[in-house]
Image (tube, rainbow, N blue to C red; front, side, top):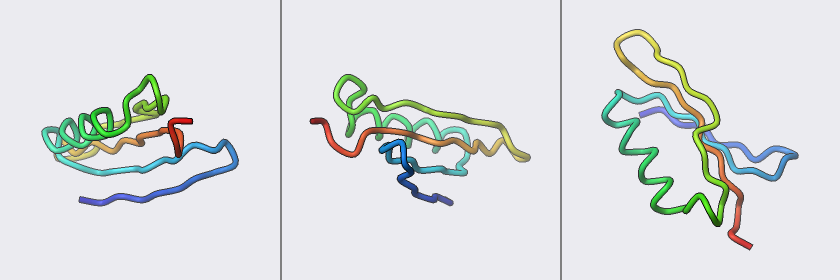
Length: 66
């Protein structure tokens, strides 16, 4: 698994992953379970398919549910 994290001037927390398709689905589901969309505005910000059916995707959420 490869991941990178950033929090830019927009105030969102972003993490980018490169995972196999099944692992990518599990990781996205973890984010939605841990950070519900209604409270954290969680979303898959972008994604693409790389060689070998590897998915690169960026998850985005607010840092807190306030």
